[in-house]
Length: 373
Image 1 (cartoon, helix red, strand yellow):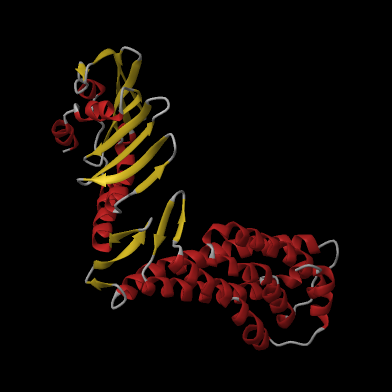
Image 2 (image 1 turned 30 degrees about the horizontal axis):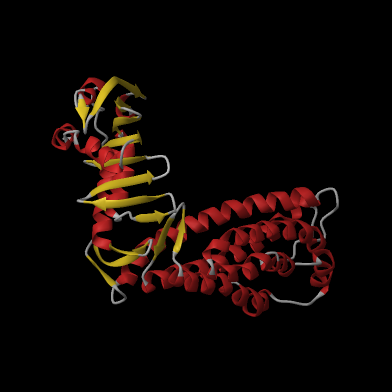
């Protein structure tokens, strides 16, 4: 990895067999990211965008094994592609030499895979994979003896095919993992019964019931496939109270965007009292409601405290709820998603966060649920 040009020259000359490359090199190094990912997932979970999921041990082992097998398959496919393309670019067709390129160009990604023990360092693994493409670009013409004028094209075409193959293999292993993961729950913290799943996974440090999560996924899928027609702006405006918690409504407006089944409608009221003012918004989320249904089913939960205030997200009585407050500016926001479709949010300056909560609760939730039906 540190002196690739000189190393490729040595690799080109050394004796090898396809079987020896796999058993003595690929099978060993490809296990590093699989094992490290298994350990890291159980210690810290997997995640992005503030969401961390810790799978059960059975599911984690399934994912690790499939990832390992996928790496072996990818290496075999890459070696075969390099060998098959050789005549088209004036290179020597040689199966062993082709598999040398496929095996050794994966070194950077496999070695860096040890960092998957700490998921936060996962981006380094991605960078190492990109460096592997550079290693292939350097090694391919040397090992396959491609003419200088055709070598860049040979390498670029090979890399593009490798990317496509990687996507296909990843999709296949993910699909298999989804099925095998259900089976893996059985006897390892969960089980599968017909088309239903039981057990739990850890999400942001909280246990999530898999049966509940499956039901939420089915609900989200149904909402996305059969979106209801957006309600009229006037229907939402009618739900905004004239006054609440001593604040008087100074203005009201509504808007809509999109068309047909993908419309989003918003009704907004401005409320004032002395030096404080906030906005109360009712939004028909339309197709986005499917995401809130999934988040509610997953028991979305987070909490952050600072010297000045706090932020909270929780699922309360089956409704996704968020709350933010700054003590220094006496401002914040409070929102609730009703019927997996309507977001009711109060945001701005207030005497305290309870005023914002009262404003949200002043909107008739029963009428919104009726509109959702």
